[in-house]
Image 1 (cartoon, rainbow, N blue to C red):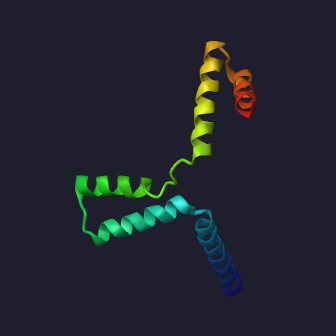
Image 2 (cartoon, rainbow, N blue to C red; image 1 turned 180 degrees about the horizontal axis):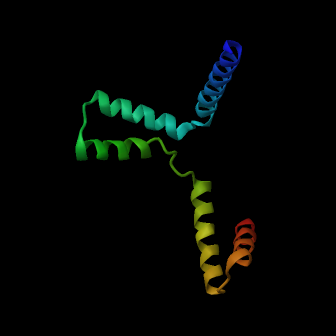
Length: 104
């Protein structure tokens, strides 16, 4: 009976370690950023609206500014979406039109 119990405990421990490792792997840059912003807010002892404003700014910070190419691509997509709207395109037809339009 004790060997069955030991097997179950070992299996449960292996499963827990696997879950812990998979959660760490799944945690991406956004979660890392959230952790560092939370730690900084705690360090500064921020509360209420002050904390909310800080967190909002902290989480949106460090976004790379648009390069000239990125800005041009965004503008091209905007124009293509407007053309698709003028043509009353919907669904897959709209998606493929915009895709081809942006490439042109």
